[in-house]
Length: 362
Image 1: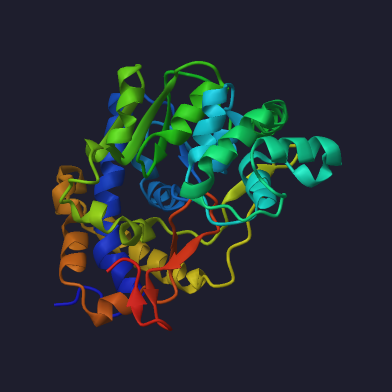
Image 2 (image 1 turned 90 degrees about the vertical axis):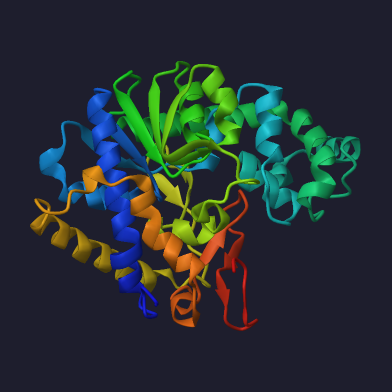
C-alpha cells in the first residue's frame, strides 16, 4: 500500500517526520552527553533540523545556530598546500568551460590575466583557450597542471574567502571550542575538516546522519565524528535503502534557497540562484507542513510515543517501505524535483523526468 498516495504532505508526515524525530532526539541526547554548548547547523541541509529543534526547545541544554556555509566556500577557504588544491580540483564537476570552472571552483577569473602570461599557462597545461570544454575524467591531469601554475592566485583567493567566511561565522558567535559541535547529513565530514583547518585546530565534534568509508583517515588522525545510522559505511557494498536511494532520501532535507557561493566583505552570504527547472517551492512547503503536523501530534502524545527510544532502524522503516514498494503514486510526488550529483551545485538531474518518461534514481 502507498504511504503517500501521491501527496507530498503525506511524504513529510509519514516518511520524513518519523525519521527526523528519531534523528533529532538522538542528536539532542548525544549533544547533552558530550557537554556541547553550541551546535551549528549547516545550510541548506540543516534547516529542517532547525525547524524540528525549534519545536523541542524546552528539552535543550545547548544553543543552536543555522549558518550559511557550503562545501565550495569552506574547501576553498581551507586551502594551504598543493595537495589541498589538487583535492579540490579533483572533486567531480559538470562539463563546462575552463574559465567557468576556475571561477566557480577557485574564485579566479583568468580572462583578467595578462594575455601573454595566460597563454603561457594554457600552453604548459595543454589547453587551447579559456573556453575549452572540460570533462571530469578526461581532463583532470591538465587541470592539475594548470592549478599548480595558478597556486599563488588560488591561495590568494582562498585567503580572501577565508576572511569573509570567518566574519560570517563570527555573527553566529562561532569560535573554536571542544564544546562546539556541527551537524550535517554526512558523509565524509568535509565541512568539519575544512573548518578545523581554517581555525588551525581540531576542536569540533561532528554529528551526521551517517559517515562513509572516506572518513576513516580523518578518524585515524583524531577527528571526532559520529553517525546516527552508521559509521564508515561502504556505499559500494551496503544494502541499506537510504544508501542505494540516497538522492531520494536527501529530499527529506530539502530547502528552497541556493547554495552559498561566497560572502560580501561584511560576511553576508552570496547565494547561487536556484535553477529555473526546480519546482521546489511547492514541494518544500508541503513537505514542511506534513513534518510540522506530525511533530504537533507527537508533542501532544509524547507521553505515549517516545522517539528517544526509537532505533534508527525503526525511524528509517517508513522510508525503506517507500522505496521498496515504490509505485506510480509515490513516484509522482518527485516530479520536477532534482538532485545535485556534482560539486558545482548547478548540475541538476530530475528524480522523475516526465518528458523523458524515466527516472534517474529508480
